[in-house]
Figure 1 (cartoon, rainbow, N blue to C red):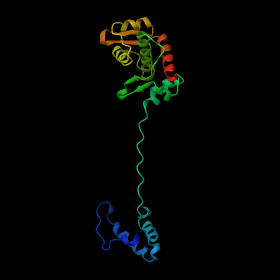
Figure 2: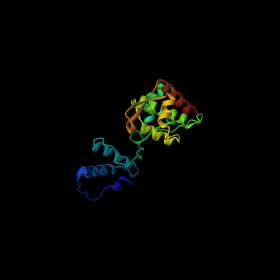
Figure 3: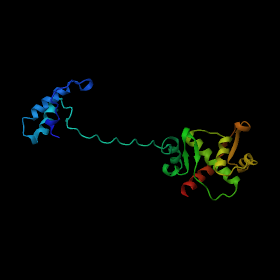
Length: 205
């Protein structure tokens, strides 16, 4: 539309942040109308820039769509888990394929191991891997028995009758703390090495 045609015939009173702009617009229109019609828009822009102190052209420019908010960086590539990946010489993105940190920092092992046949072996290995991540990435030396029970249920290797006995036989974790629900487990030196091997195998599989 011609810039001159956008002017209001009767100056209106502007309120708020636009107060006083109507007079400047009319001045810019008057300046532009001195020139041939094909130069009105350009003349108006030049006059507006001068009158408004360089606030920009009055010619409307469609606003660019707002850039989508980038998703939060997954915890696997930052903080303790990134340090764990470096310690194991593993790409953090590869580690993210086997370890997941959910809401409120809930840890899950989503990778699988296929070369262990018995429940007792899978229980000990998965638990060692879980405890290793908790220790190295979150600074939690001991892991409660209830967390390990939930892990083994998830991995279909829970044996309620032999649960604590399987840990003792494996030599990968030692029992610490109290009894019952307050019982916890800590990795042995053997368990640390087994956990590293487990995580690397899951990453490479």
